[in-house]
Length: 191
Image 1 (cartoon, rainbow, N blue to C red):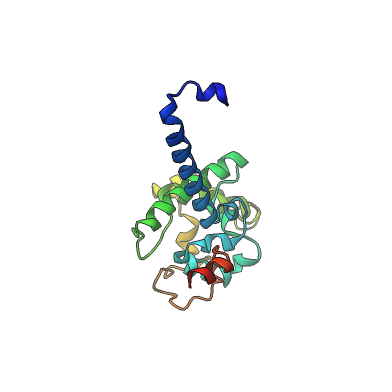
Image 2 (cartoon, rainbow, N blue to C red; image 1 turned 90 degrees about the horizontal axis):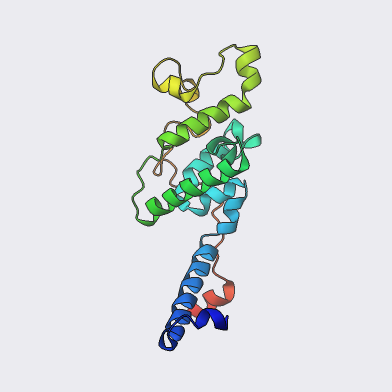
């Protein structure tokens, strides 16, 4: 440690430690308050860390998918673990920015890249149904986008979130909002 510090002028060492401490403290606080660890799981309750997602959680919890699929089963790629977490991180950072600056639309819909992932996951889960039973085959989202096929949700409009799912459609949503990450002793001190 002394060798590293010898590269800096003596007057700059204290400010470096103070700035480093502030950055570490603020980063730790942001990680704790955002419940960062919960995003590593597949629990659907993670999605309602942002209260704005409550109507979507609510519609999913009343759908047939509730028993068989969680949010990540539909909304993230499953071709490999690295792609899954990269996609989650990329989407999460985008959502964080949108929600932080209150730029979310009244009706939240997947981004273009997400539609492809969702369609691939429909095909992945319903492969037997698509190939052996109804013989619809496998159509990609790109084919549906070009008008050569239909996307799964073109026919299955109410699976699992319904077409009318939006922020205002469920003002009294019964989604189990997460508990506050602020410890009880600190809440008492702040009163």
